[in-house]
Image (tube, rainbow over all chains, first blue to last red):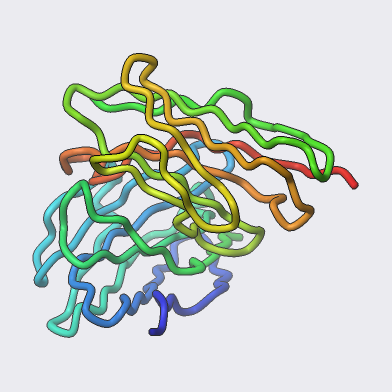
Length: 114
Length: 115
């Protein structure tokens, strides 16, 4: 069974640009969550989607947005990039939402802002 | 409110020695607890999870963890460290969604294994 696939693995952008990251969950998994990982802040929750609906949203500015498609694939978008957006962005999928469901992570997209 | 504290941001052990990574949690309800491992340039891999039932949980790669409700702890152990265990380990506690999502992570403990 294929794992969670995130594309691209690496991205370099400049300030003010926008970026779209993609996540394909494990087959059969319908819940997708996104996290930002930085050395200073650790793992921070961005948002969670289930059945094309955003269920939860973390404390990030409106520049961060996401969506989920009918096949459970998800994208996140960051507009007007800032230097502080440099991070590893991780996507995780689970069979369904809920605190008992283990999340399975992809290898992430490393975003560098110049 | 749920929270996780991992004691020690860096732990160093010799190959063959006991590995002990500490995790304490705070939860207003019976928690679900998880340990994840992250190797360089990779995502997080689930090592083990505690939901209900047996308090001693066995995971992959020879790791295990014991849920101790009275101590609000979920420490991760491995009897004999291997060089390949060098990685960063994250403890996580379940949460009821909202702005922190379904999982709250600790800050992580970086494990080094000396030959």
